[in-house]
Length: 71
Image (tube, rainbow, N blue to C red; front, side, top):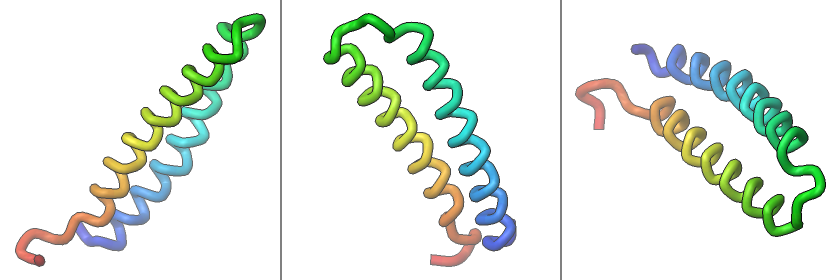
């Protein structure tokens, strides 16, 4: 796949995926976290952030993968 096309696809997936992910996690937080202790909020957002960083890292690694035969 052409590197420019791969980066374009990656950016589009990253933007729409991030917005969807954040809206989904905020809706979960608003449904489940009101009235709970502060440590539960912190733990929830820490776990959600780690999941997002791993997902974004995998996507960025795919975007920057060289063509077969290039080093």
